[in-house]
Image 1 (cartoon, rainbow, N blue to C red):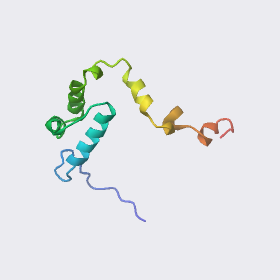
Image 2: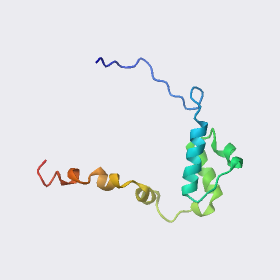
Image 3: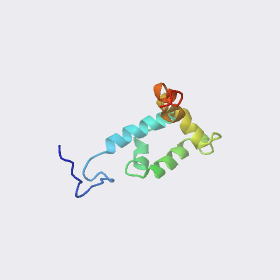
Length: 102
């Protein structure tokens, strides 16, 4: 098998080549739902085609209680991480490696 370095890389950040609006919308609905926000079609213009920062800012306006969270962002993110990320991803045999001299 031959490994070649690509001569060019193309990033489609605005959906010109691949229509990602439906994926973006379903993700926005899921994330908002996990925060207790019910999105409707009226919210689409504020989220579709916008930056993540703009979308996050808009979602904060929809739920004022999130505007001034009492839990620091890193603690909220850590609380939402999957168990596989516990202790930097080291659990099970990987966590025992230092004791075995590995």
